[in-house]
Length: 96
Image 1: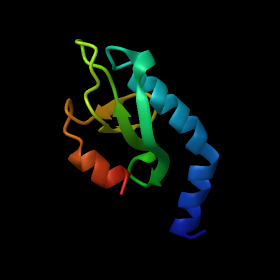
Image 2 (image 1 turned 90 degrees about the vertical axis):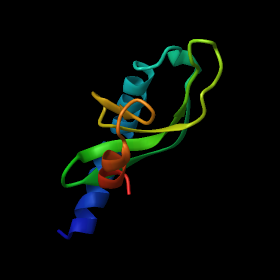
Image 3 (image 1 turned 180 degrees about the horizontal axis):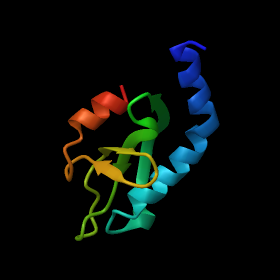
Image 4 (image 1 turned 120 degrees about the vertical axis):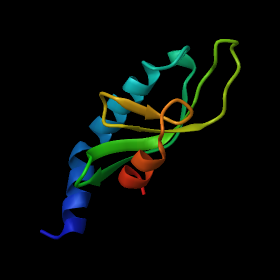
């Protein structure tokens, strides 16, 4: 099986499950989880990270205002969130 075929297979098998788990994990990191707005969330498979969800989330801050869409990477347990964590390496390694 080629690398491209393996990547497609992993994304099909685990993609939807990973996206749901990642959105749940991201919501758990937010001040107002019910107000989260997700954009462009997709599953991606890499040899290094396995299947992860990459996307953007717009969330409310402590004053009740939206902060703008920020990138995130999550495998469903931990979350790397732009503005809080150094996301550049994770984004380029897992999402591009």
